[in-house]
Structure formats: C-alpha cells, structure tokens
Image (cartoon, rainbow, N blue to C red; front, side, top):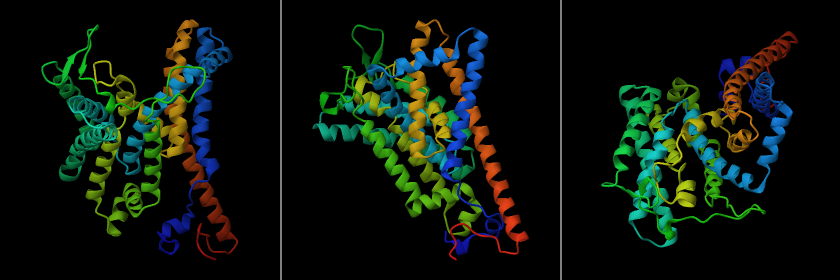
Length: 383
C-alpha cells in the first residue's frame, strides 16, 4: 500500500512499523523473566540457579550435544514455520501435529515400497509428505470457508482422527511390519536411495547433523520471500490484519484462507522428514510426537519471523537437550518444562506491553506535532 493510500486512522495515530530494538525487546524480556522465575523455583527447591545453568551450558556446548541441538532445532524450525504461516493469516492451525505424523507415515510407506534413483526417491518421499500434510489441512480450510467452522475446533478434532487413522494404518497387516529384535512395529525400511546421509560438521563426535538441515534453511528463505516480497504475501498478511479491508481491495478472503491452510499443511508435512530420511528410515511407534505444539511456542517466541524462529528453535533445542544432564546431577529435569512454559506465557504478555507502548508513543508524538501547529507526520511519506 502506498503512503498516499493510508487510512485516516493510520495518519492520525502515526502508526509505524516497530523498530528492531522494540521487536527484539519482547522476547528478550520474556526470556529474562522466565530465568528469574526459574531461579526462584530452583532456590526454593534447594538447587543453586547459577550452578544449574552452568551445568546445562557446559553439557550443551559438548560436540555431541551440539549435534543433537542442531538436529532438534531443525525439526522445531519446520514445525514453527508451519504454524507461523497460519499465524500470519490470523489462523490458528493447531492441527500441525496430526498433519506431520500422518504425512510421515504415508511418506514412509511409499518410500519403503518403491525403488528409484536416489534424487528421485528422496524427492518422491518429500512430495508425498507435503501432499498428505496439505490435503489433511485443507479439510479444516474447507470447513472454515464453506461452513464457517473455527479452524481451532476442526484442527483439534482432525488431530484425534489422524492419531486414530495412523494407529489403524500402522498395523502389520496393512502398512507396518515387525521390527526385528524389539516389540516395535513400523513401515518397511526406506532403501538407501531414499535416505539422506548426515553431515559431520561438528568436530569431536561421530554423531552427524541431519542432511535435511539444508531443507529447513530453504523453507525459511522461501517463507520470507513469499510472505514479504510478493503480492500474494501482501494479500495474505492484509487478510490476516483486516478481512473487511482486504475485501475492499479486491482480495478473495475465502480463497486466501484455504491457500494459507494448504501451505501450512504442506510445511507441516516436512517436519518429520529430517528424522525419517536422516535417522530412523522408517515410521514406527517410537516416531517423535508433539512437535506441532512445540512449533506453536517457538513461532510465538520468534514472532513469526524466520530469523527469530531460528533463534527460538535453537533455544528450545538447547533446553530440551540440556535437561538430560539435570537428572544425573540430581536436579529435577522438570525445571526445563517450567522455564519453557514461563517463556511462552511471558512472551505473550511482553508483546502486548510493547504493542501498547508503541501506540502510546505514537499518540504522544501526534499530540506534540498538533500542539506545535504542524500536520502529523506519516512514516515513509514523501516530503
């Protein structure tokens, strides 16, 4: 939107995009506040906060731990991007968890059933995962645009259906086989042509970083360009901010809602790919769960920005990985969950406080300019 097309309310309030410092202050305040609350809890329980943090930092900087952090952050990042696509459209896609698990199951079954040259085999598995994730998310999108069903309710229900459907499909007479030497069952192993080898980029350990960490980087770049450098992204963000304004400018709101849900589901389908193609090579009962809900927290912490989400994913992965050393040190590992929960709650409050500060600052500036006899200045307008 050009400056000349700004609404009267925008000109009156002098609304501007938040500065980088203000945007950064909210998550930093949330992390600091969470650290204070966690320190108090540690003191009450008889554990020294500084020593506990030192133990976690010491363990988290070991070569093997660094690899585990990067691997966890890769899947967390993809989960947060899937959630953030919906957030930018003002949609709450809680169904990311069911979408990625169902997508990983079907993609693993297809990958274990075909034999293709390496690049085509990998591409087919990833395509199937995206297709299944997008298809499952589109159900919620269609329900919203056709019947007005809240995506929050429909995606919660679809999570339960996806879990039941996955359990039904993960049966040895359907898609799964027994895993030798264990009570686990899983899909047929994906041949070597469909596997993505890890990368030994951290010296001092034989554990490798997921090769599909590159995929996470590509997804982040595509997400940023699509939403911030294209007309489609502008329409999507405009619809999320004000449906009535989007309709007035000629945007098909129902179409944008459906497209946003499909894109969110397609991104959700990628969440399980680093683990599936880089480590397990099969979908079984022990496949990671709950990543969709973790993505919600990280998307909030990163404020739906690809770089902010990356830092949030690394922080979450560090906390999760470091928690394993606490039990050895006879410190309750649940303290990490308390800190994570406090961060989520704090970041929401911090964003609201920063938002109110920005509004108040804008009103004060406009009042000062009006009192001085000068017209309110609109950010970005030509002189």
